[in-house]
Image (tube, rainbow, N blue to C red):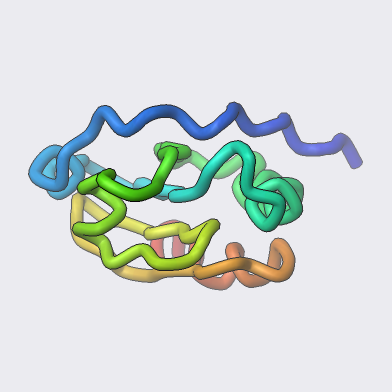
Length: 110
């Protein structure tokens, strides 16, 4: 089995809540921080779960003063918010393995 493609680093927030609410189709918003050891540890499981899925995946750097994470009530990292046409349908906080993410993704991909 081919290992999943490595995920890019978390990017500075460039999306507002209204823009996230307007995203069409399946989207995963992943909130975390590049320096966060828990995020780093969860990244391989997240990458494995997302490998080959046809959806938008945005890794968003979160922290104090970052409004998008606060708008979604993010308190722990990593938090993955699954959106279908801008509406939250599932959430995973600190996934322990790929199955945690895969289970939530089932709400998006069927």
